[in-house]
Length: 121
Image (cartoon, rainbow, N blue to C red):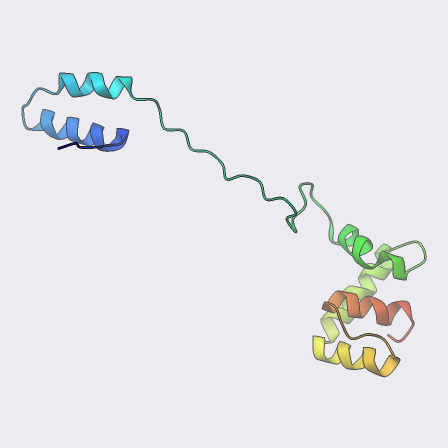
C-alpha cells in the first residue's frame, strides 16, 4: 500500500510520532528532500475588461463617451454627468433618450452623456 502525503501532512505525522515518543529520523530526512511547495498565481486573463493601469472615472468616461463632446469629457462635463446619474434612474434616462430620438441602448452614464451632449439635460 502506498501512502502519499504533502509536506504539511508529513510534518504533522512526524510531530505525532515524536510526541508519542517514537523515532521519526527517517521521515525527517524524507521531509528535507521534498521540494518546497510553490503557489503559482493564476494566469492573466487575456481580453479582460479590467485594465492593468489605474484609470480614473474621468479617463474611463472620456474613453467611452468622449467623442460626444468637443474636447472630450472635462471636469465640468463629468460633474454634470454625475449629477444626471444621481438624479435619474436608468428607466427615466431610457425614456428621455426615446423622447429625444436617441437610441436607448447603453449604460446609465452613456445615456446621460447622450442627453447632456445634445443639450436635453
